[in-house]
Amino acid sequence: MGDLVIHVHEDGGIQRGGGQAVAALKAAAPFEVELMPALIHYLQEQNVTAVSGIRQTVWDVSYAGDEGGIVCHLSRSDETGQALVVSLTHVRVARAMPLVPAVLGYQKHRVKKLKKQGQRQN
Image (cartoon, rainbow, N blue to C red; front, side):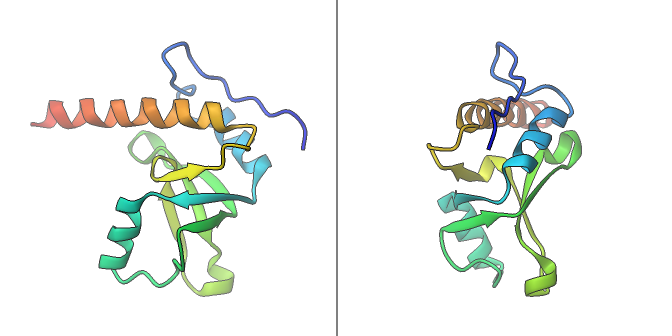
């Protein structure tokens, strides 16, 4: 795999629209992630059967607009009959992955953005 670059602004945010980030992550797929504990708990509560453990394979990546951000496609509907798509903010990327600094920057920026939006709505 060649060098992949995600444009990260000085404040840690990936360029609006996620175009470069999505392209770089798509090029890296498939890759392994670990689901965050809160996501695992939520999926168990919802009886989502497509998840069979903490480690998952990301088969594809897409951008769900400003509201959804960058999302990871974990299960392939052609294999399981179900599609499972989760936010990039709810997974941990392996530290050995070349894109990990940019992914961590995106996650930090995204969480801050969501917190600000939540404060404005209250």
